Length: 369
Picture 1 (cartoon, rainbow, N blue to C red):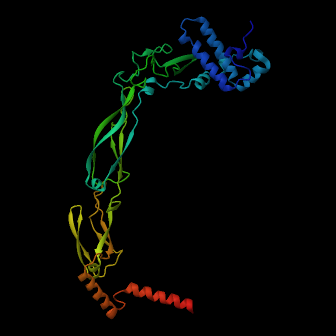
Picture 2: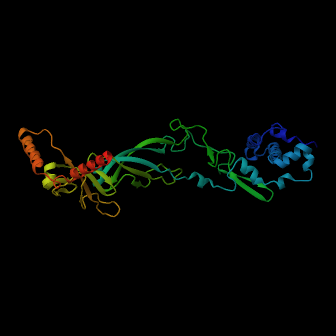
Picture 3: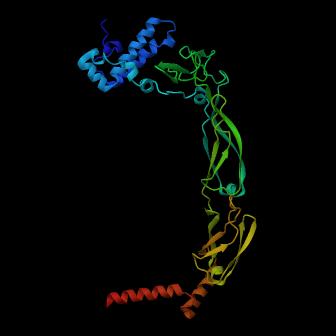
């Protein structure tokens, strides 16, 4: 009996590339698979024929031998017994030897992330926020099946999601190529979710933000993420914190920093200033002769740590403010003060100015000489 040409069996040319051969085999194998043609002896024989052709043409060495010698190259060889059956179907269909349908389909929902922006005051005191987030929920119309009518049982695997293929003494189990392990397929997709089984909806959550949170901190809400498949657990929702820039304070860790304007008279003579803090007011003592840039530290007036309850400090940077919009009396007082400086001033009144002028004189003296 004359054997058919392997290229003709798969319907490809002799110059066909590997991917063309694989594609042709997959199409024909699915068409003539015994499970899809129960009791059809012709389909079963055709399937064996297709399988044998693919075993030869998918192997570069065997294909080369076949191209040179034809069927005679394999007259002393049982191809089915010398070829790894799992490699053939594994390469074409994938998911060999198990991959239980139950484990595949029962998938935990995805975790979600939501960015929430807080003011510094809210972060320090703590607050409860109402947020509205989009999530995927099972479609109410199809009950999450994705099908407008009852699901169609897969006739390839008979609803098991797996098919078994015999090879000699071995049985190879693989995911059904028809239903991809589901055991069923959707014949009439749901008109609402378009066959996806889920719809995007919005839900409102009340999120309690503890005091002391900072930018980059995350709060996990267990089970508030995407809904899982087939009764699997839902994912989690992660609330990521971002603190808005404040007009007065700058936060670094648990410490607060600010610029503190001070009247030049108070800076010169010394005095005290009452400034508001988180738990009331605190009096800051300004030493006589305070200069711009001096930093005063106020212990335990910063932010309470969310991790160890330690309280940071408040650091105030002095900024000497020059008075403006002076009335006649104030201008006269300052004029007399300037005259007094001109008559009685020495290096002790303006040490920085005295040092600057000395350095300038030295600079130009060196240049001239």
